[in-house]
Every structure is written in C-alpha cells, then in structure tokens.
Image 1 (cartoon, rainbow, N blue to C red):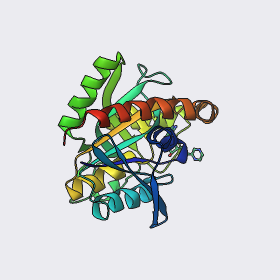
Image 2 (tube, helix red, strand yellow):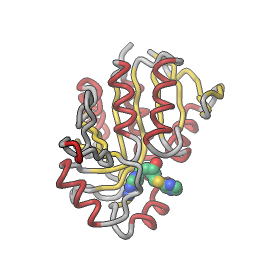
Image 3 (cartoon, rainbow, N blue to C red):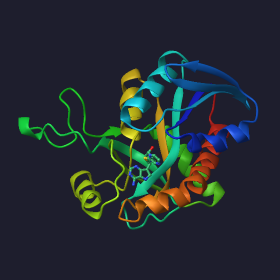
Length: 230
Ligand code: 4EH
C-alpha cells in the first residue's frame, strides 16, 4: 500500500525519517519528498511548512503525483480541552477552519459555500488507532481539531474557538489537509501530541515541548503503519 505521512514542521517528521533509516529524496513544488519501503508498504514522507496553504500543496502532490492510497498527518497541537496535557495524543474525529469568516453574507463561522464546516476523518483509521492505543497502553483522545493560520497564544482566542466549534485542540494545517484528501477521495487521519495550551505560555511551552511531543505522535503513527492492511 502507498502510504503518505506528512507533518508541517521539519521537527514533526524527523523522528519518522530516523526510524525508517534509508530513503530517496525527490524535490517538487517547494517540498522534499522522502520515499522508502517500510515493512510491506511504500511510504512517501514530507513536511509541508507551516499553515493551510503550504499543507494543502503537499497533501495535493501526495494524492495526485505520488498516488497515496491513505494519508496520515503527524504533529503537535495546542490543547483546548482541560483533559489534554502536554504530551497527550489526540486524533481528530473532524476538522474545521476557525479563521474562515464570511459571516457578513449570513454564513456561519468556518463555512464556505459548497464546502462543509467539519471534515470527518476516516472511520477505519480511527478504529485502527484505538486498537493501537489499547495495545500500547496509551490514552488516546478523540475530538475536534480547529485549524487556522494563527499561532494561538491567548486565552480569549482559544475560548472563542472552543465555544464556536466545540474544538478540543488547535493547530495550523489539519483542516486544509482534510479538505484536500476529502476532495481527492483519499482516506486520511490526523494525529497530534499536545505541545502547549494555546494560552499566554504557549510560545515558551511550544519551544520546550515541540521535539518530545513530535516524537510521541511519530512513534504512534509508525505503529499504525505497521498494522495497516494491504
Ligand atoms: O505548524 C504550526 C506550528 C506553530 S507556528 C502549527 N503547529 C505548530 C501546531 C501548534 C499550534 N498551532 C496554533 C502547536 N501549538 C499551536 C498553537 N497555535 N498554540 C511556528 C512555531 N515555531 C516556529 C515558527 N512557527
């Protein structure tokens, strides 16, 4: 099976590249795509750079040019739910764009005509993740992830996103990747380990925990890959 694995920042895919060991590289559309085989699967791995636009480019190329049959996103996120502490894992049930605002035309926040507010992730991939979590003895949260082109570091913005979208975590790429995969008809999954709580301390916490949380997410994603059927 051809499996795409993406992150946004280089740090989010470094633990994955370290684990797979050897790979070839292919430069295209402003990205480096790392290709290798892993067990019985063929992997294409890349980091997109930060935000919705760059992540949409990378996901589109993985679907269209690399023929990805499934796409897994691995990375870090700001926690919204009080249950989520730094280092905890959340898989997205659905993703939305918290910065979409055409409310002036009577649309709800996050809605674009002919689109949807919430894009759901693949049921089978979520079920697989739940199994992996049980076997690894890891608490895996499931919830809504809100995406926007903002590093959220304020209690007010975080509270607004929580009440408007019932979001449990936030980041800057998941919903755009979800939109791409949904439109290409590719099953996708988004996993994030918490690096900060999107509050006044977010910048400091993020710098402190980016590497360790990225590793938590990457390790889990690779365990999923090992168990994906052909
Ligand atoms: O890819 C961006 C990174 C932050 S911006 C989104 N990622 C990390 C997830 C994330 C996040 N997103 C929004 C973790 N915490 C978040 C938060 N708000 N509080 C960045 C980081 N470092 C250098 C440059 N840009």
